[in-house]
Length: 361
Image (cartoon, rainbow, N blue to C red):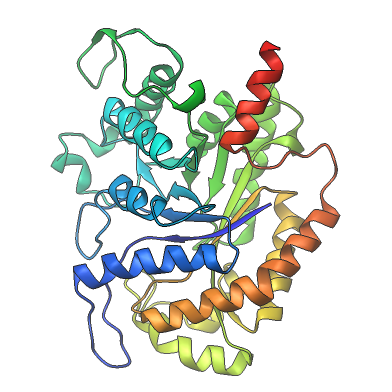
């Protein structure tokens, strides 16, 4: 099972001292955070894409390429790549390039994002969000698998005898996760292609996540990719830890109360009881995370959100230390002991290349 962190790249004022990091500080800090994730033994670092304040990550491939040059093992991903407002041709080119530069240490999560104004900024209509996601990904899927592409659709100009360059490394396209919080159409899309499905799993009660993943598993099997429990599932998670749970609650409360997304809404206690947010000791995070398996089944990737709501870099690095030293080793052991042999691991470039070689041998 893969464990890692993801960032939405928010630039938020620290409510405890009124200080707001600059864009430059946050950009440099995210590189430090990613490198430390590898140092503490995590598998994945994923970065979101936004084109509006207060976020900085408008070009995740640039940032991930820079991180790739300074890491050795860390798998680099996105959270998410905007399949609706990006040109699928440019996605094909940019992520194939990143794949080569990182030695195959890249996959990506496709999604529609959560910022409505981004659609008109890029000449798109938000009312066509789902059709855009479906058509654009169909083209991207084709570009990575066919050398010469002729194509026409509703949302972009046609292609005639077009070859996307560079070609995917070793002829193996990056593995794709389809990320969604609320859209069953995206779960259906992931199932149709046999791709991964990533449920953000942060803001909603477990019953919602359970229904979405059950739908994906059912449709994955319907399309002939394997049994339902062999579908490739990822979950997001949100944690804040201290050795003592009371200290964690006390320290995190002002950040929660003033966070851009959920601040000034439900209380911290209500939110932690009704969603997967866990604020407490490492032991509590372990227990809560292991409990996800009870309602989604065996899954392949668990990503945690740590660097948000104005938390200072020092605190984020301390959270990473706790995650890498006390939480993830236990989770690895426990999840591995529970997983049946027929349930696959998350695909990597190496595993997909080996499978392709076995097919052609």
